[in-house]
Image (cartoon, rainbow, N blue to C red; front, side, top):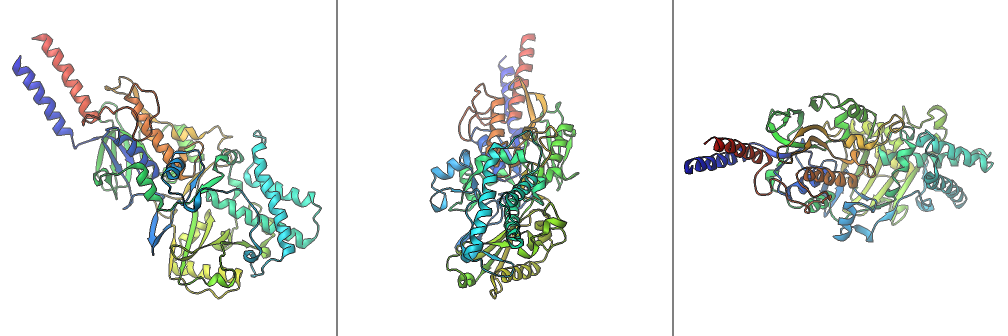
Length: 545
């Protein structure tokens, strides 16, 4: 009997040693905001976790680039909303710049000194009053979205097209010049709203999805690089947890294996796990053949991925030696582009996609910053952002220099540096963020479909059915889709889901709280499973002695 027990103990130790480095409990695909927070929650509960990312850096669609004494954000750059984990964290840690969040609905028109048309004409007080009147009407239409009849199936573009038409009709505007001014202001508002979702057109955006985002009326800039805030939120990671330059090309599931998940990368490396959390962008999931699931995802999941919208926000940042714009105004904050000469664009382009026009036509305004250096930025949404990515640096600089000169009537010097996002052309992202496409809800889909876990099997540890394949990322969040706040909360959601699988505690712990994982003693789920099998086998043998 003594030898039997000693032999059993030796077998258990051998299993522990052999499997210690061969597999993990959970593999997280993607080292962005959702991946980091998901991994953090699991690591703090004792799970063995590996994080794979196709890039040579962490951050995903967050990309904080040091410049001068500060930094530039080429990806996400604000914390949206006030009812989420990320906002609570940056508020409590005093990381919000400028004293706190600022409201972001359409507000009053900019000051007269920095509002000009394509000819560089500064608007006078009479025109500014008219602009404010149009602006107020469109702002009212935005506010009235809360009272919109949800049974109506129209796009955001159609809704606002009706709003500007009603404004012109109800105010009996017949003077051609006033009509042009109203249409010009509306055109600017369209471009501004398109940049929120990286859209080709507001006609691609569901009115219902727009209404569902009403908690996003505040945004907060950060004192520190965005990725640093996420890293602090997640806690310190060991370098051993990250495997960079590992583009995942396949995920397979076999319930009969001790580790049912096998992950294959482009380099041929394989990783085994009990669970995988996929946090890649919706753009990657949409790209046929880029990430192969075996067995294939259910049709409902595939159709939801196809139907959901995924946009591209183009961002161009020019750094200058000195603020040449001081000749207009010492502390200029932004300059909306009013395309008066193209005010009739809707006659040939009713959905305002600006087809056939240069990419700069889609820029809503230039924004001016004094830190970390003297910079001008321009944002644009959709296809024109993709067109910009295809150009050389020299072409982008030439186009921006020309358009800034047209609107300001200034001699624009050559910039010291160009910084820009190239998110769509990067196969690891294929865009920037999700949106609710026009018929997504009407076709019977909901955001929960994108978050639904798949590949269920029986766990020896929990004694219940668990899902091997889980999804996180901003596109899977039902309120904060398209924003980093949604990515963070979705990562917490999926970490909590796994923790619940192996815990009798039915609460939803955030990272760093909750019940210990089955691997909390230092054993992985696989090690624990094998030990359970050995013990069960030993009991049978013992009963025969």
